[in-house]
Length: 129
Image 1 (cartoon, rainbow, N blue to C red):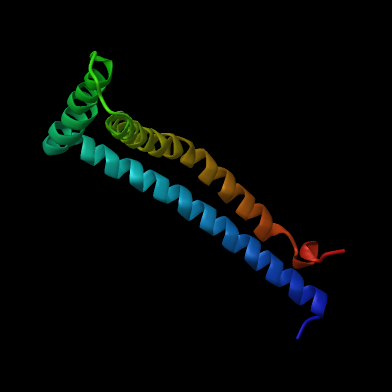
Image 2 (cartoon, helix red, strand yellow):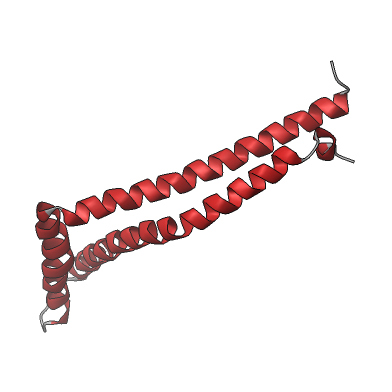
């Protein structure tokens, strides 16, 4: 059995390595999400229903309702705005997936480098002073 400080240091090192692995796994999941969205975007039904139908046609229809002179009630206007916002949010979600996946390889490389550095450090380096 080691000294209490050395045991704590080994535990701290193990926790740091586990945190690194978790961050790498998260970045790999970002890449998987991007690949899934790419497959979706290639699907003709998705293109027809979401990209063309929802993003373009429905968006323009809703925008047209707001810009045409009429006597829309406040709750109808709020509902239209909510629908437009939902289109924007879904587009933003796809953009976020692409952005995260674009940065992921560099982050994975940095995390792997850091993992190598942590593994190379002696356990004593993790002793709190």
